[in-house]
Amino acid sequence: MAAAMEEHRAELTQLDSAIGDGDHGTNMHRGFQAALERLETSEPSTPADVLKVVSMALVSKVGGAAGPLYGTAFLRASSALPGEGKPSAADVAAALEAALQGIKQRGRAEPGDKTMVDALEPAVRAARESGGEGVAAMLRAAASAAAEGAEATIPLTARKGRASYLGARSAGHKDPGAASTAYLLAAAARALEAS
Amino acid sequence: MVGLVLVSHSPEVARGTAHMVAQMVGEVEVIPVGGDPEGGLGTNPDGIRAALQSARSEELLVFMDIGSAILAVESVVEGLPESLRSRVRLVDAPFVEGAFAAGVLASTGAGAEECVAAAVEARTEPKLHDA
Image (cartoon, rainbow over all chains, first blue to last red; front, side, top):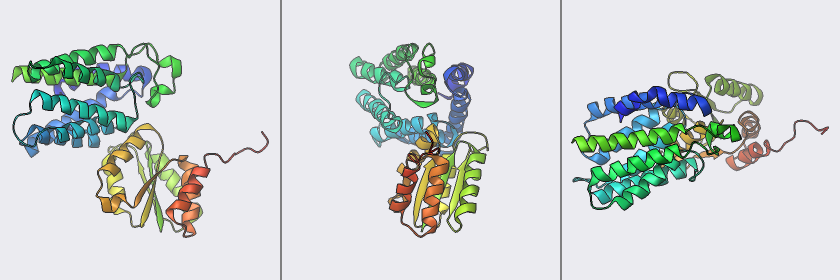
């Protein structure tokens, strides 16, 4: 995920320059670099602990709305995973669902608001429907649905955040938060396929 | 006693507002938390947590400017121990005018409820009377 944020840093910042304050790429990159460093020093023993460490790093280091939102998402996902043992596909689906509910609650956003919810909600649906093919395939399906969801934010008018002040002028641009959500899920899927 | 924590994207806005409130109301604890951890524009959840933990006032009213300042404060408060969380209230009011109104009430020894009401009223108080 840190590598994905590094790779897409310029693009996310460019998307954010169009309708936001132009720092989403830089912020996400900084947050995930901090998460990497903290993972190296704290050596968490379970996937749930890994997500928790990442959550704390993101809350502290990602300035802007993405910090609390992704921080909440990773924390809720962490709480949904079992305390020990390898998470099952059902556990991972539950974690994604918990992340979505956390983001919706924290950001008070609904589908169609032109936010990360528009990527994560279809991802959760795809994860639930992928069934029986293992965690990597599930995350692949989720990532692909998230990418489609992010593309689908282009014509929408923003109803949250700085972009909402632009009204109709926010249409025609992909939402940077939805874009980063899709990249994070794609990175998670790639990591599992490689392991 | 009621104290104020002022969370803005801008270090200058947070400090400036705190300075103005302190000058005009006197003996009220006012803690500014502005900008990101590097002192640039943004929010600083660790700084917000530290401010709430270090505050001496029994009750704390938190004023936020926009967007991520609100999200950051909410995230931080959610993670506080109950003993501290029960002393903290987020105020849905204009940043400068609300903090000022709450500060004036706080300086008279009013409780959190009254201070919040004054701050919220600042939203509807007209500035021009000839419209």
